[in-house]
Length: 118
Image (cartoon, rainbow, N blue to C red; front, side):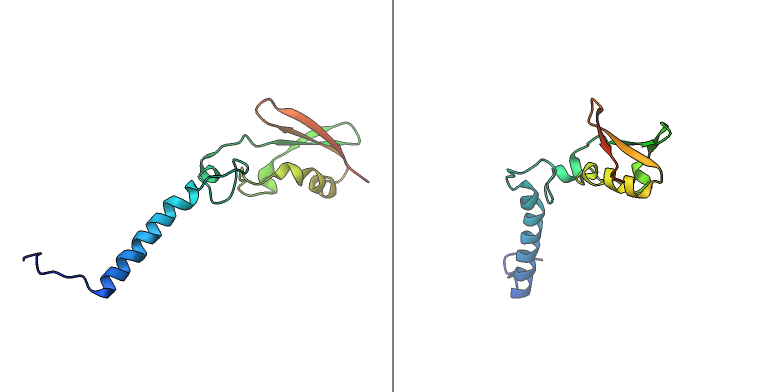
């Protein structure tokens, strides 16, 4: 069959344009320059970065300390969600007898103690 006499129909041209635009969007949107944080929505870093999850330790009035796994409150913790901002207050409200929450975060495991307001 000879290709010389083949002409694209309007429908085929339209489908090709939509396909090329869709593929272009899949690559161009994540590659747009970002001046914001590394963990930003619709950026490649959202999927490619890894951040060691924080540890949450509950201090009780009797002096005992126990670790609360993040997975108990967030089924599949994502690194683009700032759990350190909300988990201490939530754990203070949910765990009976808690007097403080210690958050150990980062590679160096820097700790921050947040007393529970009772």
